[in-house]
Image (cartoon, rainbow, N blue to C red; front, side, top):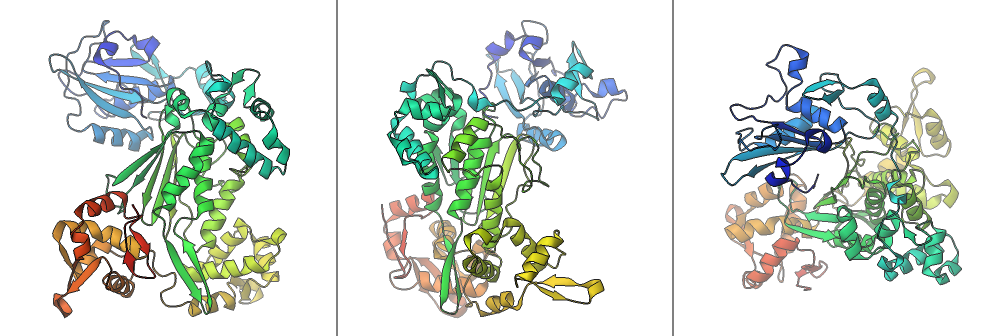
Length: 590
């Protein structure tokens, strides 16, 4: 949640009702987690889960254990969830899907206090414990009054981006960012004269300012960095880099806090610096499929910025692995969007002004079309569907895989798109139909299947009473004709060496079995052998010694003699160390 933690001094003077705080002594024993030891429903509610639900329904607040409820609140100390606050957070999330933050404080006598910070309920949704929407009424937890429940159910997301940012003037906006905004609008709208408009006029035309008043959207998009940091610290974007998907701690983290029209290119550059590609070849025809498609990544990140909930103090976090990218943005899906209708519904934007300006300047697509782009391009590259299953009411989690599972399918779709005119290109639903049929499923939309069949992109099998569609011979020929190495590996030389380097740095050498264990099942044994052979050629980073079963690999003398470089390479993921794979050399670009 990233809220500022309260202090014991602040807690002592807080009022339970006004400040939405619930104080519990918990001096002699722990507060029950779920009230399972009580018989009466009214007694079971007085547990951690019950108070969390009631606080969330009241707009968020704090559950405090280890302090008296009598004002001023004295510290009595508690052993509640001692050495297990992380587990408490996880258990609450599993039970309620509410992302709380639990932390401990100590007073001058070293008495321990536990605080659970609870976010507000999702817009339009009252939270429940044992199927009852709870409400704090004095010392009791009671069913929520009908009037309050009705008001929550009628809630809509306000346009936070359209609100005026008090105390901000046009002098607090960044001229470079405004120039980029004007140039992008002029290009997208085919209106070159827009770039020559005075800044005030351009911003006014886009409704980012109203007279002398500046909107939140204007600050987020073109505000000076120091102004954004002061008024919208939650607008920061963090990128964390990890060499393996199993590790919890990041190897490096970059923070970005600047006007979005400046930041978007910085974000893509940071991600692309650690990008790779999969070569796909069929005969003389060859192209590379990037691990992370620029258009897809920009669309996901831009959507996260445009549609996140800025009332939450959390930041957007991007976690990049060698073959996976996770983008986590605060706030659930906009109203009306679910996992089932994510490609079909026209949602209500949470930040309409912000989204409108980004659409007018060509940064994001309109009316949910951005999700079409994300799915269409990802599937067209032979990858699995973007995964949004970890999304909940408090955050959207988009997981993109870089692994090219079916390079033949990528060739198949690419060849069709090249021969079709611009106004007849395959849609995301056409490609989803191909995917269903490829997996042996019946197409969800029979009309789309009929259309693709009439165009010659599907074949029929079976009798009239049991007819089924299959992909055409063209797909299977492309798949069979792909060169052996093409597209079958998710990793290139850079990815393998980046994962292997920490092991060699620690242990000095590695047997073939060690390398296979470290790399895992990401690539085949044949592919791994070829990559290791390339890395251990003269001038490469590895040295091979020994024969047959006694063969070991170690870092070359050049690398061993530059330990400072090695440490930095490990820290930054070797992005800039692999320069010329054609020459099989790895050099420092600084």
